[in-house]
Image (cartoon, rainbow, N blue to C red):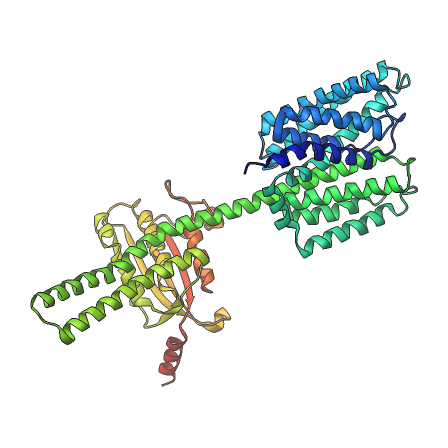
Length: 538
């Protein structure tokens, strides 16, 4: 979206005003009245602006630096030297901003651990270079006492480095509408108040009266950071570490606690930030992997369900064609009445059946919804087995279906057909490694004892094949994503099948052996269970 002319004109004045506010708020415990403080978040604001608009940031940043020296510090170095020092800072920060922009462009700075480490390395090296030259200029001008060069280099370097590392992620997130929206969606929750309140309590516990605190319990500061990182990823962490830094800085400034080791405090917060950012990015990456896996499973399900859809739609479409031809024949003969009406009604019924199949498939992919109904075991096995008739004959595989008990499972027929089809397809692939005459697949079923299972009665379907079987090592990882014993397999079929079975309240497992054994168990439909019990009682 293109910015309005008014917003473009106001952007740089707003940047200068915000930069001066940061400069004033963090002008804490300075050395020799100069801009040598232990926490400088204002360069983070300038670097974010440089990433967004490039070299055009230089002029307003230079103005902000000069105004800061005048309004906040009273220009202790004089006008000429202040202009020279500000010019160098713009060159140094500009080189750092250019390096960041060249590496990350105008987006994706904190997208992964690798990019996070790149950012840290560039910031540390860039602030160090900037710091050495700036302090050298101050030393040559006689504004730093002899022998204090190393001390001021460390103090200013820590201030810049910590300020950028702690503040830049949150400022970056707030710099774009998308970032603000994501930050709002991430942390605008009741739980956020919980870890912010914990942060306040921990600050009080660790520091108490900050002038006399020895920071013996600093490790408690990790609690709110870890909480924010684990729950809300990088965005929650960015908010948390900034709040902690703000709290520490506020305690120092408003209590005028200038005798404490402020640089050590800021290094502590820098370490908190790096640990928190690392945890937060790991959490975000795991969530992204989980989302990608879900999408992969849905795509795998789409491929598997395509066969089910084709099979399910074949019958109503064939019936529709037959009834349509019958209607055409009746119209040509000039017949109407009940015969034509009956044919049309059957066409409507078959079209409704086809629409129901498509609707159920759509609902499954959108929400994972299931339509549970009694599914006859023998009919299920027979229907799926027929779909493999051509492949079985082509590869010389003997499929033996043992007598099926007259029992019905409570399941979504389309989804359970998918699972059984997947098991038979895997068995067919496994037996092809055997010589001709030794390729066999057996499908059997039995009712499991409800007392032994500790739950409702189940029907167990077993698919055995004469392949090489499953080893102990493979069994431990068989149902993990992207693990497959087939050279061309994606390793998602069994993951999807187990997920479907567990969603039905059933289970799917394999057994170690010298041939393939896969078992699936599903709860029996209540009417079927009652009929079986009544039959046994009679």
